[in-house]
Each structure stands twice: as structure tokens, then as C-alpha cells.
Image 1 (spheres, rainbow, N blue to C red):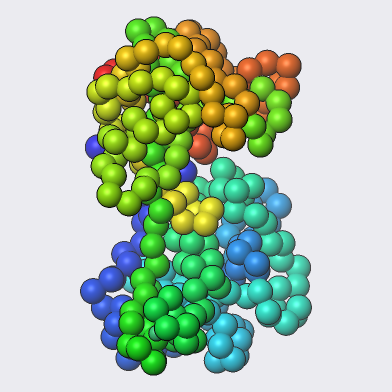
Image 2: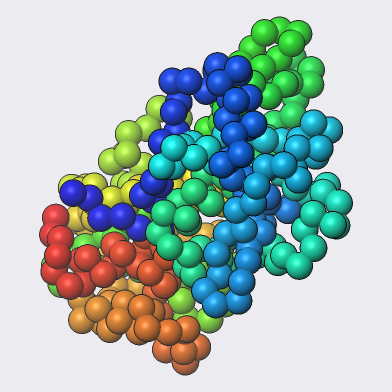
Amino acid sequence: MEEIYCFAGNPLDRASERRRDSEWIRSLFDDPRAQILPLCDLRPLTRGAEPTVLDWQPVLPWRDLVERGATLVFLGLGEGRPYFAVDASGADSALVRDREAIDARTLAPLLPAGEAAILAEARSLVDWHARHRFCAQCGSPTRVTAAGWVRRCPECKASHYPRSDPVTIMLAIRGERALLGRNRRRPGSRFSCLAGFMEPGETLEECVRREVHEESGVRVGRVRYLACQPWPFPSSLMMGFLCEALTEEITVDPEELAEARWFEREEIRAMVARAATGPDDPTRVSVPGPMAIAHQICRRWSYGLDSL
Ligand SMILES: [Zn+2]
């Protein structure tokens, strides 16, 4: 079985084959057991101090907002109970009183694994609706159908579907050393795997080789897939790889990286261990925390769990 990282392992049955059945979806919305997750400006409402949980609510108080046009998406079924998300950005303050809306990036590491995955689904979809109100083909306003999984244009009849943007993220290996980069937009001494968006007409392997060469000047040969992770900022799929560096000389792309450096396996193992136990010590080099797939790739390689 594959390893499951933050934002993966969604426990809901998306019932995708029935989402176009509007009668069925309406009956789910009327089901007294139905639960709804409100997101205010993409931040989910939460409940409680310790531990923090998503504020799943009964549907009834939200019915009026949905009838007035707030975006509603069907997330799936869990143990027979329907789950929805609503864009609560314009909700009356009475509905969100005593609730705290927390940014998904801050909240996710505190949530149980399945909840973080449902949050990823909800956040990506609500964000997609907010940014795709008009038809990309003719410019007319589009309408939500299929329980929030399609937007249809009433003028030109085009259907628009939510998309995920594929990103490759990779650790280039040369013997007992691996290549990490420090982003120019991020101050401090945080290093991470190199990464970049796939381009049209490119295979995953070609994308890995292009990104490593573009960012660091290093040439890459063999590429091996490790694992992937949904990343709802706003809607990426992070696909993780190990790859074989054929050259060592580094020439960074100053648009992307402040620095790239070869690290010994032991150094990376120590950085992973520090990142797993606490916040960065700004005086020492670091890697991202366990929420990020970069951490998991570094962990797997530095602990000898994976090789090329
Ligand atoms: Zn259109």
C-alpha cells in the first residue's frame, strides 16, 4: 500500500456516478443527518480549543444562504451521512458567531488525516467556483450543476470541470548526496526539494528533468515515482520523485532559487528529524515539516527506505 500524507486519504464516498441526479442530491440536502462545512474566504470554520476540529453543522441554518445563491458542493457520503461544503463568505454574522475561521495551511496539521483530506476537497472546489463564474469559451455567466462538480454555460452549452494542476517535486540523488534548494521568496535557511508545474505535452519524467536543470543546472537521468499528495492552494497534485543526478555543478536560476546545495544523507536525516519535532531554528538549515511531501521524500531517502 502507498503511504498517505496530509490532505490524502479522503474517507468519503464521492458517489460521483450519481452527482448528476439532482433529485437525489436534493434528498441528501434534506436529510436531517446531513452535515455542512462552511468556508469563509476559503477558511473553514472550526470548533473547540484543543484539539481543533472542523465545524460540521446541520444543514438547516444554511438553507437560506444556499437558496440565495451561495455555492454549495456535495463532498460525498460517510457512513450513510451526506457531507456538503458551502461558501459562507457572505454569511450573516449570526451564522458564524463564536466560530473561528482558520487558514487551511495552519489548520491541516492539527486535524485527523481524513478531515484534512475532506478539507482539501472542499477548499479546492469552493475556490474553483469563486474563480470560474464565467464561461472560458464565450464569456457568459455559468451555472453550477452536478452537485457542484460542473459549471455549465447556458449560452454555448460548454461544460467546465474543476481541474487539478500537476506539479512534480523531486530529490535529485548523487551517491550519498542529494540536492536541495532555498527559495528566493522565503527568507531564512529553509531548504526543500526542487519542484515545478508540468507543461502541456510533457511526461512526468521530462518535467522532472526540465525542472531540475532549469532551477539548478544539474542534468538528470533515471526518474522514479514515489508518492503524491493533493495540495489545495488552490488545487495542485504534488507528485513526488527520486531522480538520478548525472552532473554535480550547480548554476541556480536566480528567478526561482536563492541557493541550491548538495547535502549528505546524514545531514538531511538530521534536518528531517528536527523538522518532525518542532519549529525551525533560524540559525540552522531546515526542511519543511511533515505536512509537506518534500519532508516525506527527504525522510524516505535519508532513512534508506527508498532508492533509485
Ligand atoms: Zn459559453
